[in-house]
Image (cartoon, rainbow, N blue to C red; front, top):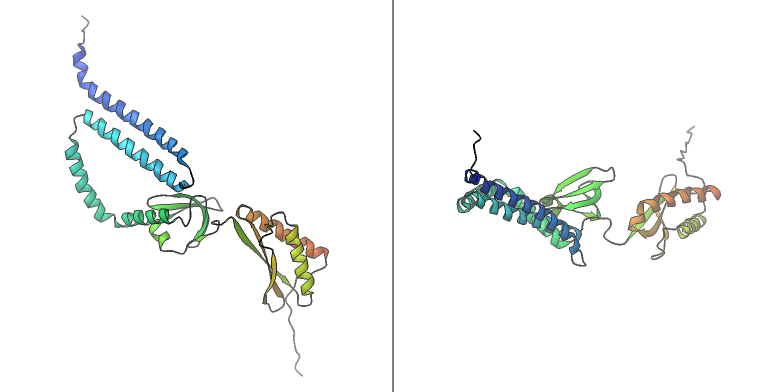
Length: 263
């Protein structure tokens, strides 16, 4: 004989079903609201602010729905929160470094010395900032590797922001022989800079005598370029200098050694 199940026999599953539905809704709602927060971009909202807002919204929404799910399972949240408080104190004593990094991260964000997308040089590393998080910043190097640097170390180090301003000064060092005409070389270098499509024109390019070498005179050509064109401008400018020097018969200097014979 087929046994007819009474629906009341499955009533014990209802709290689990409601808890599961609430958690799934919370998960998708947290992701949805986090993505929508990207539209908050504006003059006073930087990319790292957006990243922190996204993470905060995601955690808060998911936490609220998780608590609601636990209530459906008759969990005593007061006991849970009390236990969490004790655990938080214990973890706090064991995680002083993490707390210090969080505080330093807040100072970094408020100071705005650099933002996501800037290229920085710090502690022997150079790369583009991928993210500024609560505990660390992550940069992508020119070799396409990721470096994680704790916020505490960043705040206590000298950080060079290479892309803070719209323009950067491009310096090219050139050596010429002492027998080469200095004025002609300077005029030629200035012409090469003037003809460069990456020359910002203001400030104007300059050529100075940087120092005296043992067998050569060292010049420095300085030209201002847009920060996004820096690498390409450097490459094309050096190629143009080589071509110009070859066409005008200016040779590369070679080391000279004078030997005096004693009789």
